[in-house]
Length: 558
Image (cartoon, rainbow, N blue to C red; front, side, top):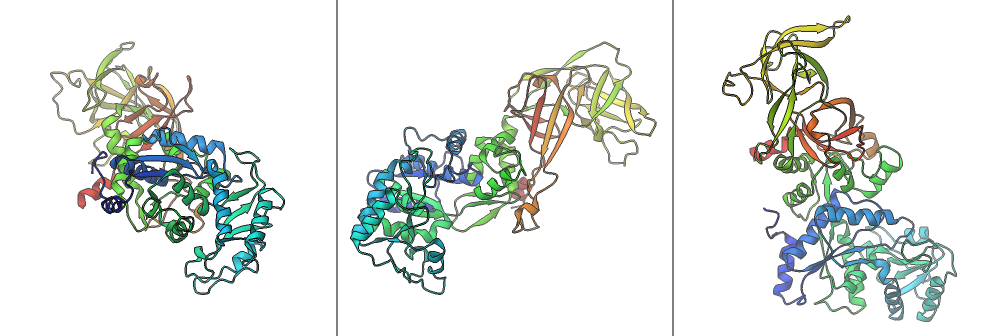
């Protein structure tokens, strides 16, 4: 399905049914509601694309709302990074950026209203006592001894909680629903707790904070959200979502409707902010934007494109059941996009010197090379007596089907001439350190006499003009079993070879003044991007993906 094509997923079908039944006559309104307690990851990209996409497809609106109800884990750094990631993906909330903290006063008033209606009470039980009395999936919970306090006593205690009279954990406010409910989330859930913590927006104005499950549906209702689209782990929370809005008198024809979809899980990585934070804090990665991370900032630094991620989210679709997606599908989308957009250059990661003995010393010839096979454009690359080739492109004792360079055999240099290996130079230990070759001067690529058939073509760089670079070869951060699953201790699955740094790679000079973030295809090697660590005298490239595309082969078989 094309990126701008209207989706027909089950969420859209639910919206169509609601509109058909006369609901939400003011129009469709969605939201993306991140908690600012970490950086966004690839799973959030799916939610971003879905929520903003539903709004676009239905001529509606989509808000950005930070559900900032837990000041002990939130930070302005996360707020800023989330906004940058959404814009980078290509979406805009315009003037509709909100925070749950915008509504703290209203949320408090709603809590008071529940108390007045006999639907909430202050509980002096400890967190452990609440947990023990909650019951199990097969046993009903036990009512708190404080459950039947009077409305007046509850109002007094809740007012004193707000005033800061009690210590953290001394009391909570709980909804009064049903301790025998088969759904544990309906067994008098906690809706307010005491936390004498500084909030990144409200400062020290509050010492009680609403729980996520209380603040989230009410924030949706306050903003006029029509469809609250969230992941499947919130399915069991939906009865409380609906109970809360119904208890406070929100009209069923206009109040938000929660719809759950399957979250995105990828092989060879983790899509959990808690686990990603663990990787950062324990120093297993260099930071939230480490190119091995599944964070959007990490994928951006790795060189993935917004279009590729949007296409990937479109390809995997919106399902009702959780599943594990092969990361090769994401890489396929990246390759498809970069194949259309990335200019081609030549780079040598493991150089082997070649002296072309029949090219005069001091002579430099400038050859024409195409920048892209489809979009055209040319550049000039220098060619002289001394060049470097990839060490793996030479084999002294080569098998019959080795069509690269070997003694007394020929190979074509990309954009240049056919060369023949005449002599192999070795050091005292017998290691090959240099090749002496000759060119066929009549075989210039693109020339009138360049028609001699040669099976092998290799890349190269000219010795004197090549730019030294550091190249970071990234692989999967985690190793999975044959089914793509990780062990319970995911740290044990860390791939020790997830980063290999090549210090003395050589790149053709056309990349010298390119800006960080510029992407290229290194011929025969893969797609690479200039990293933001690059300085004037230290060029740094990250490998985005290799050229090998296993997912494309799987698609062809299907």
